[in-house]
Amino acid sequence: MADPALQLHVVERRYRQGEATLDILRGADLSVWAGQSVALIAPSGVGKSTLLHVAGLLEQPDGGDVYVGAEPTASLDDGARTRLRRTGIGFVYQFHHLLPEFSAIENVMLPQLIRGLTKAQARERAGELLAFLGLGQRLTHRPAELSGGEQQRVAIARAVANAPKVLLADEPTGNLDPGTADHVFATLTALVRASGLAALIATHNMDLAARMDRRVTLRDGKVVELA
Ligand code: ADP
Ligand code: MG
Image 1: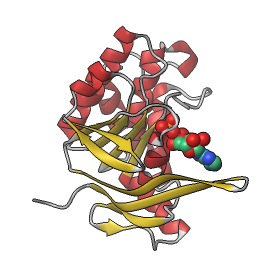
Image 2: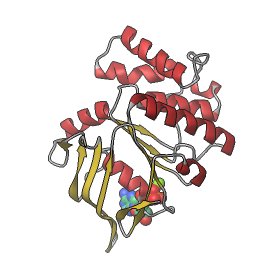
Image 3: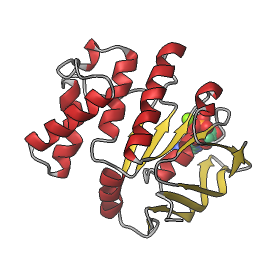
Image 4: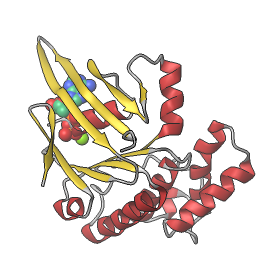
């Protein structure tokens, strides 16, 4: 089998809390392959966001390594990590974090312009992505003029604008009502299948998790596969 798109190898992460040390990740192993969607399900405070931040190269692990494609990342300097994160990894948060003064299509163009694409190239890809996500009629709307579900779909389009290999999402439908969450989720999984992304998605919603390819949880700082 090909290399995983994302691999956590005996990852450790701990936080100082005054005198105490919180060992959140204690040798976490996880592989996610291209085209695969994995649900990360665990109670609040267990370490889902920590794991996603380490997987997304936003935080350095205290031990172990994170491989993006076949590339180990622990020894990369900050510049190299940032470049790899920009092109290799997309991130979706619970809150959309779209730029309020820009339109939907401009929000999706921005990461591509930062990468160095021309405006025409960025606009074409952004338009295609938004159309795939059902937002073809909302290109020039600003975030405040969009519904919560539409805002999250724009945030998903922005996350994959640079065609990353890996998509990480931290409770992406946590702020949405159940019907809207369902629709956003269906769109997200369709995108994962169509684009061959490897997706790791933290969620509390068991119905949504049941529709993903795999389910994992965190137990004693390790990743455990669920049925
Ligand atoms: P989850 O996303 O599953 O709710 P988190 O990964 O956010 O959990 O947090 C796991 C634990 O680590 C929590 O107890 C939290 O308080 C602690 N924690 C997270 N980030 C920090 C930090 N920067 N400094 C200290 N403790 C932290
Ligand atoms: Mg969290």
